[in-house]
Image 1: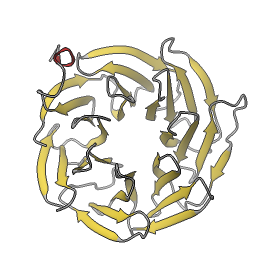
Image 2 (image 1 turned 180 degrees about the horizontal axis):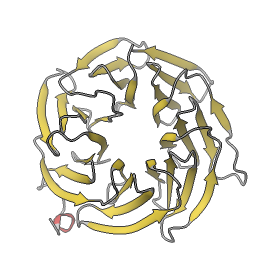
Image 3 (image 1 turned 90 degrees about the vertical axis):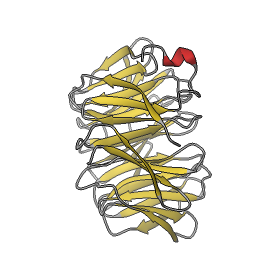
Image 4 (image 1 turned 180 degrees about the vertical axis):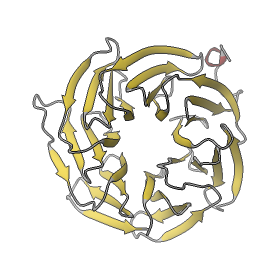
Length: 306
């Protein structure tokens, strides 16, 4: 997966806190310190729309499965649902007692789940008329740093060093303790394993059902930052940001470092978003995002403007 930088965009957002592809990878979203969300065509360097309404930094953002809505969460404690085309907020949820740090949508975009500095996960039914959480999960003993959702499970990571997996079918909660503050947690694409990033500068691949440690990936540096890690679409490679300005890439099976993609030297690469269909990804550091991919696999119209 020897990819090249196909595009660099200055987002002018003070600092980009998260970058996210939409469901089919045709667009992406950024959110940042300027309290705004921006919608981009990263292949053409086009900023399509700006969404403003949060009173604090926007820390995470997701696009719905049909790309008609955006959901964002902020240091102002709120979660907002936006209409993509009009740019107007449709709903505003205010249940958290502290800043909302991370966000995930279920497969059909009917439920949003937000994690917070108040140690809780809150589930919001986007179809309901009310603005109260339909469920609150309080098992974490410290701040929630990351949340993901599959078709039947919620995965969260906390500063208390535990990754918690909630089975939506029976309400069961399984915990995996890694001994250091968790900065990222995600499922592998086949759903069999968990990839857990922690502040001890290690990524751990765990068997989802047994909790067995299968492999560790090292070399990158996390320090005290919340830095994201991802599994590439075909499950062959692991990606992680780092404080040294690189996106580190390991072979999933061997644990060997295969590539280092330099975003900007000695600048923290905080956020990563993997293309849902291709071997490509976005990285975010300070005020810029970069699109990485194989130029031969990106349609010509998507490369215009580089």
